[in-house]
Structures are given as structure tokens and as C-alpha cells.
Image 1 (cartoon, rainbow, N blue to C red):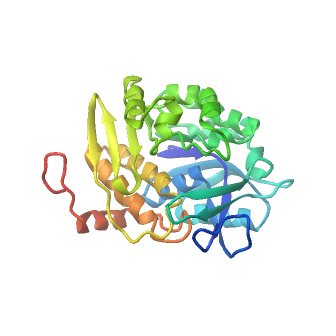
Image 2 (tube, one colour):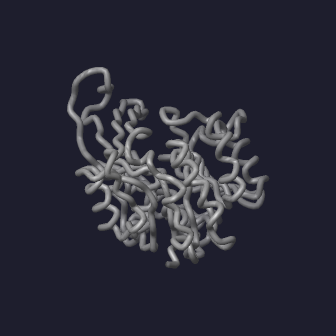
Length: 321
């Protein structure tokens, strides 16, 4: 089929607290459902940016499942490998936000439809001529069968297909120590690793992020650290590139990191220089935060270019770009 990018993981819907600092221990108002999940957010953003994309996962035959499938389909994602389960409901996550920028997650995942993903759902023919496969630590954190499905991809993809890996450690689903034990095959196959702040040090079990990123670089990986509103830092061939962020009126930060990953792969697919690719990814991630819901702010490629044009940034030589 010749996809630019394929991903696999846990389709879910997100229901979020409307008010800041309202935890799950007391009554309050929620917003949603919004289609979500780290790899679904990623693949939705990648499709909106003009890539040919496919996704593998399981939803329930319910309204939440329809909500999820409709969103990806409308964004241009191939949904032929999304299965609807008769005997389970679509996965749900609840999110509460706090004034210090932190979030709390409450997952209904392992016993939901997403946990029914199995190696039988991975069709080798689907990956023919695929350029990239994107895998995350959260996708490895589901049920044993879903984990085996993710790892089966490494067995069936062509040698020419590249793998990107986002550790995306969610302690509510699986801690860093456990993830480290099961992610070795993915890390070995990956050519790019995209950790967020603190994820690198947790995943590599070292003292700080810079040390972690340099260790990953020594393993032959292109390492891109996501720094949120501070932009990103690229480790490549013994060099580092620090790339500034773009300013927007942020509403909902959930999914910005996944959108960043999608935009960064978009730049790699198009053969752009790493610095320009980092600027593009920073801009796309910023735009994704401007609407409620983790997929609602996913920008079209023209919107990303417009933001880049409107906020000139110095390039690595000190010139504007």
C-alpha cells in the first residue's frame, strides 16, 4: 500500500476536567468525549500534515468507538485495520489539570477493547513499502497480547522501513523499570528516539536528560528531546541543535508531544534539514494546544508554515528562517 507512516496502539476517548485543580476525589464537571491515545493522536496529526497514514487498533462497537473512527477517517487515516470488538467497550482515560502544569490520568484501558489487540491483528501485507512505523512505550504498556502485537511488527516490516520510538512513560500504565525490560527490541530497531523531559533519564536509568540523550546517540540513534514550551534539542553525529519554541495561546497541552513527533517525521520524510524539521515540529506542536481535545488542534501543513512565517526564528547560523 506504500504508507508514509503506520502506527499501532490503544484507541481511546478522553474525558477531561473542565476546571483546574479539581482532582478525581470529588464531584465536578467533565468535557468530552474527545478521540485520543498517544499513537492515535500521532497518526491523526501525521495525516493532517499530508502524509499517507495507517493505524492498527481495537475499539468497541459503541458510540465512543464511532467517535474515534470517524475522527481518524475524516483526517485521512486508513482505518481498514481498526477492529470493532463485540465483547468490550472502547477504552477511556480521564484527565485532571493543575495550576502547576501537571496532569493526573485515570485509565480504563487494560480490560477495554484496546487490550484485545493481538498479533493476529498485524497483517504483514499492510506494511509493504511503508516508510516509517511509529511505536511508543505506552503502546507497549497494554495487555500482554497487545504488547506482542506491537513487537510482531518488528518481525514483519521490511528492512527498508524505519522505526521511530517515543518512550512516553505513563506511570499509571507501566513504570520506567518495567518498560525498560520490554522495549529493548524496539530500541534496537529504532533509528530515532523522541523522549520528553525526564523520560530519557528514566528510560536509560541515568542521572540527567543530557546524559541519557548522549548515551542513545552513542547507540547510533538520532535523538530528539521534546522540551515543551522551550522547544526541542536534537542530538546527531556528536553535535546538538537547540531549537526555539513558538508562542501561542495554549488551551489544552495534551497531545502536543505526539503532534511534535508526527511533524518531525513529516520533515524527515520530505528530506528537510534537521534544524528546519525541528522548527516545523515545534510550530505544529504549539498549534495543537490551541483547542480543547488532543486531536482537535492538529494543524494542516499550511497553518504550520503560516505560524513559522509570522514568528521568525534565528537559524543555527544566526540568520532568520
